Structure formats: C-alpha cells, structure tokens
Length: 173
Image 1 (spheres, rainbow, N blue to C red):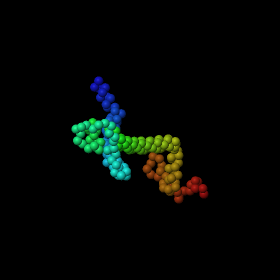
Image 2 (cartoon, helix red, strand yellow):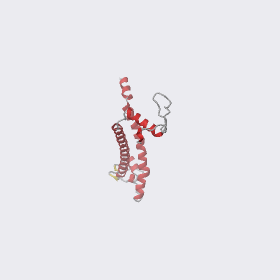
Image 3 (tube, rainbow, N blue to C red):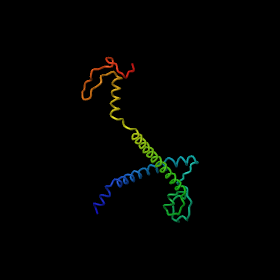
Image 4 (cartoon, rainbow, N blue to C red):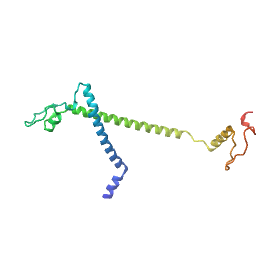
C-alpha cells in the first residue's frame, strides 16, 4: 500500500496540484490585503468615510456581561451576538471579483499564447520545405550574383572562375 501511495504522490499532476494550492493560498492573501488595505478604504473614502466591514444588522440580543463597543462587528461577533454582516459580505464579494478578474486575465493570456503557438505551428507545417535541388540552385544563383568563386562540392577551394572572365547565358546578353 505504501508503494501505491508513493506512486500516487509522485505523479506529476498531484505535485502540480500541490504547487497550485500553495501558490493560490499566497495569491489569495495578496488579494485579501489588496481588498482590505487598498480598495475598500478607497471606496470608503469615496463614499464619505464608510467602513464597509463594520456595517451589520444585529439580529439578537447582546449578552448582559458584554463590555465591548456596540458598533464593532468583530467584538459583537466574538461575543456570540447573531449578526447579519452585509459589510463584510460586500468586502468578500469585492475580494472574489478581484480574484476572478485576475484568473480571467491569466487564463486569457495563456489561451492567446496557445492559439499563437498553434497558428505558428500550422504556418510552419503549411509552408513546404524546399527541395535540395532548389536550395542548390539558390546557392549557385547567389554565388553568381556575388561574383565570388563557385565552390565545388567536396572541396574547400573554388574553381577560380569569376563572373568577369566568363559570360553566362543567364545574363541575357
């Protein structure tokens, strides 16, 4: 059973999933901080200083021995008072929307990259490769245009024939 478990854990998709969960948790903390520390205070400032996390409706009685603030959502919740925390819910909705938007942008970028890769792959497959004869003819043409010595296959030296010494029938003269 241990060998089977080890084989299961060693599979690539399980390790990928573990890495994704860890990165997702860290990403979630970053988004939560962005929401709580930057976006919601800006929204609160734009709406006249409202702090959405403290908006709630009390649904039950406050315990007689309660000594905390009557306007503190966190204190009342800690004391066990039944609350409808719509401000906290709004904060979580904004948090979710930011995460969903970031994931959407990431998936969109990956899909675009995959589509470009497939398009390039299809273009490369659609363009037929030149035959060896065409490649050789192009090399000969380029050598003749440059006026350099034509190289004989299998040797490192040219034949010594230059363009000025011999007229070619391809010149049209």
